[in-house]
Length: 471
Ligand code: BG6
Image (cartoon, rainbow, N blue to C red; front, side, top):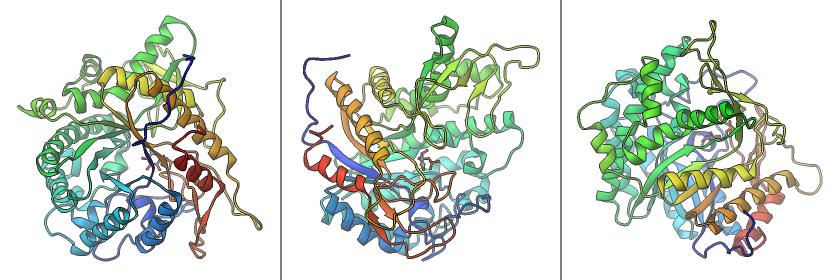
């Protein structure tokens, strides 16, 4: 709504930026690191692999110096599980432990608050080989032991922790769980089994964090898609509500309220996908409530009703990678009101305010944006600097919607853009850049990997210095 007055950002607002280990570190087989499912992922040959990435492993000091120059208040990064436990469990790799000690110390020295994601897609291949990874209940203890090790080792300096990045995406992507499955229905069933194990594991880790880390705060980092009904037909509204339940809220209700929502339970039971729930699982979730809710926000989706018919009965799933249509529930439709990125992600800053208000209403937990950014194809010009005005426009409009949401009572801890430096995109290699800092390499030509400040670097620097007065 329009209001007469809009409050400023609070003085302790965490102005941050994000990355993930496998997308920026490189050194994927160095210093004793074990393999993760991302290291062995089958990749289109036109796209680079994760072996060098942005070479952050060797250049983290230079990168942190740039963060300091920018005035960044927080840096959200993930720890590569396989640098700490090369096999996922068992033997500790001291060189990996030392790397993150150094990285954290360097951030603290630069007055930057570390926000650590315990696990961001790069699941240990060792655990997949030992027992099938997240599909087996043993995965719960291994995740909790790993998290406990991190809390004990880094918890004196790291106070903000994120349990699992985008669990809602991982469960739909067999390759991120470490298996292949052509049968989409079977893959979904296994995905929801993994989802259950992740929720129990995350809840136990929350308990450990509260026990071990003095003043520690921990929460899930989900990907939130804002859904709109395509028309004002009530059937589209229903499709929109259902899409929100089965795409966004299902695991958050487990993470935060310790329950399978009735809608999600019915959805799973109808499709014979309900995982076995052991005694005590739901209690563990109920007893270990997160301190905040982090979410990644990139776009919204417009949906319309998608009634079942003879050829499309309940359980007919019409997507390959990420959910986009299900018979009897919803289908995604292009939103004619919005422009999109080169990858078709519909740009919707207002959707961020809507998302924040929905989440606040349902969970009443302080919010933290852990990712929000504009992916683009970019080439450093021969003269001058790269003027990434589209990115500045995207980020400032999204930040404005956070300000609006806060003005209406939503609590926010901070905002981490995606990403600080250019890094490898989840699906599109190095050709899709998000950073404030350009990394001089191409898909396959590593060039000199030099860091160069884009126009957005200076814009974010000013924004932080003014505590968002320009937003
Ligand atoms: C999120 C992930 O899904 O979106 C990141 O947490 C990812 O790892 C980001 O990079 C952007 O997606 P993409 O496919 O453009 O890299």
